[in-house]
Length: 283
Image (tube, rainbow, N blue to C red; front, side):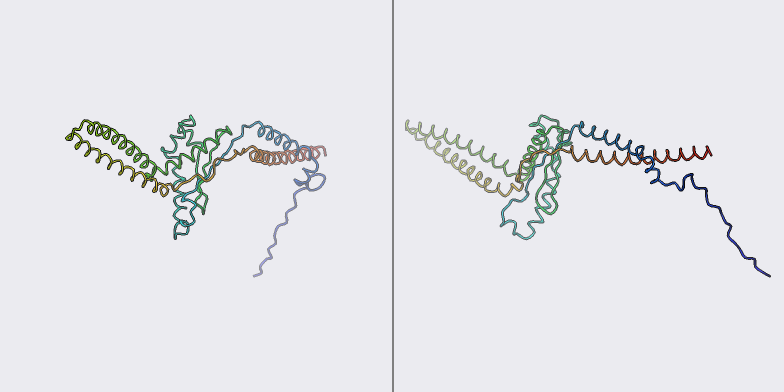
């Protein structure tokens, strides 16, 4: 039984458009102005919008976590520890104890401060960036500075350094005034030669003097320990605000140019097809 040879059917090529094979480049070459018009119009509109758009300003203050003492930094594991603390303190920028003082001083709502201020640690370092954004260049500088100072105060309160120091100082002043009042009464009793009252007042004076000395010692200790609790220091105040006008303008122009090019190519191809169909109909 013979097996017939199988042959593939032959298909005729589609007819070429009049004037030769048509390509996108050919359409652009023939109708360059049509393709260029949308680019010019959209880029012009983007430039006008970018220049008239109200810019957003940014200002940045920097904090240092852990101090700049070389002796401390030489301790094993110290660098890793302060980097972890930098992450923790940067996340505290939205804490109520940080936001409310800033809102009160800036005369803004706490929500406004939360929406316009943020903090991020610089990777691999103990430095924290406190960044404020807004439409007012002067306000963003003030917000960044106030937020940085507030975060430093908040860190100190967490470690109870400054709060304890102030309380000890108040106790010292109160004990000192009490001792003075008792000594005045004691001196009067001595002049009157009232031995019974003098002995009682002398005992009270000794007790008040002991309380005053104790408060003074505690205050000195709190002051000495405060250097250890002040782990966060302001490294740099808020700098000159930067505007996003140029960067945003570049984005608008690039997007408009791309959109205009796509539209222009489409129009050029459509125009070329329309002319090709018209010529074909005339024939």
